[in-house]
Image 1 (cartoon, rainbow, N blue to C red):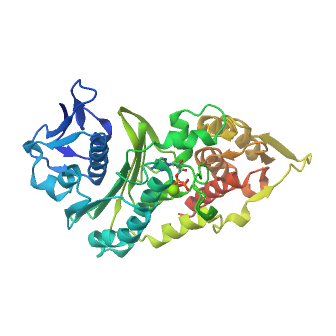
Image 2: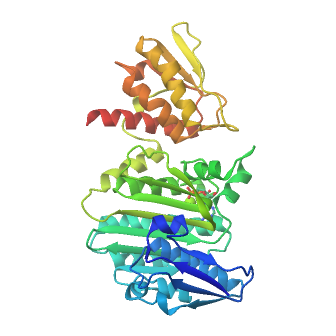
Image 3: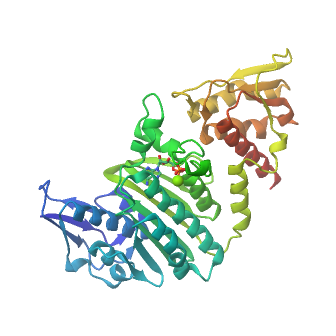
Length: 410
Ligand SMILES: Nc1ncnc2c1ncn2[C@@H]1O[C@H](COP(=O)(O)OP(=O)(O)O)[C@@H](O)[C@H]1O
Ligand SMILES: [Mg+2]
């Protein structure tokens, strides 16, 4: 028999970190008939939705492999019950309490039908938060149907509201094929798991779901941006990696990637945000505008198909650094500091030439462009032209320019 041991509190960080703080498997039997789940230091005091969703998905997966899940008495506490953890482990399709709910995904239709009332049950007193949670969960659940290759089944959705702190936490976890496996076939060259996850989190870069061509590849990106705009955080876990971003760290436009001590077979995404104390319609609209490429300042940004080849314009070639992509932030920083900024500061007019780059990532554009716009002197946008940008590169450029100029207004 195998034993799965969980700690006293099942928060995101220890859940992701694995032992000794998080949950971990002990035992040598590679093919046990049953797995016992116990708490190392009873009683269990806290279980976040990500823990409920991951353990629920994991237990379902183990059962599919023909294993029994045995819940040890040490795990039975009021919190384990109210959070839904016990029901999720026991194989129920839904459970929890008035502040913490989960349900197991079944069919796409049923998920769409149920999600609204499910989120409403927890968040009806805070309609803005309800909308955000609904949006995030709908997108994350859709990803399971679109990409995980489990037929949607076995994945768990969970959401909770901490009434004391007004913190909303939500998560979707599956034991499917994981993000790298869905991204790699779409790109030439050797993408490692880290680059695959990075691309999945970029807007319009993955886009493996062809649903009407709408909303292609922006799901995870939009969910992350939304969480940060609502003073929250985002974490995606897949295979041996996690990517995290938090509003407390404003420079976190690039998520932080960490190797996991224990591989997660599949994908799990956690989002937290504040239910009250923020005005969300502004940020939500701004993000929608950004994705749809119609932000307020885009008119100031000069895009050209080809270089003007004019003597008074200095051309800086951007080139690719990985396959057809420009995604190396360090290189972007070096181009900005060593090549472009000195020119702009001397009043020289510069063309940034992206010809041949299929896509420059948001992180790359951010690292390249924000310092130029902020430090390039008067009328910098009049002296900075963008040449040969693919549609997929234009949107992160617009966003970086918007970001750099909007901050100036504060
Ligand atoms: N649950 C999942 N399982 C496997 N791969 C996933 C999952 N969620 C997302 N992905 C991968 O990440 C990419 C980006 O997801 P997303 O931003 O929602 O865009 P889209 O779903 O429109 O492709 C997907 O195209 C897919 O390759
Ligand atoms: Mg999606």
